[in-house]
Image (cartoon, rainbow, N blue to C red; front, side, top):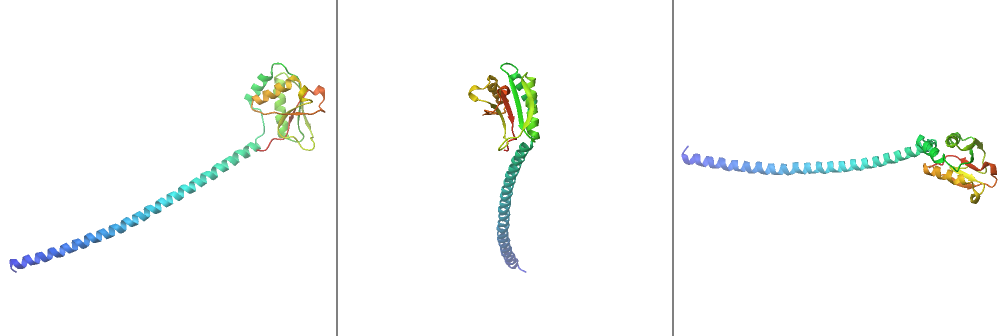
Length: 200
């Protein structure tokens, strides 16, 4: 083959290689675009799944918080009222001075929780030097009292230690309602009534 023939052959081969290079480049570009599209779709799906998971987690956390609150309320409902050691110490200190007087303590008949709390109150008053008649249980009509309160015969002519007693319980974080009972005997002075535990 002549030099001219070789030259022509190599030129043809060069054109063919150039064609295949173009085809390869175009193929790489096309498949690269498809691969990127698949990656983009996978990324979008991942973001959606992640968002859905975060939403589900948020809802679950909300349900958990509600359940924890309900559990705390249930524990408060079940937990009996009681004076902590710190409350007893402060109460005795607040009530150790004068004025002090006679106190009767009444709890709801058949309510063990109310009676146990009344016994604690009675013990604290006696430790502070107050005179109590112990804890009695009574039947109330038409409904049992709820909560914790102090009863006097007449609010305008109440014994001087009644307000002191009420303020002392407020000071230790135990609100004490006030009421009048004209049938209360004068010698009873002041009566503490421990009713049923209030429901939250």
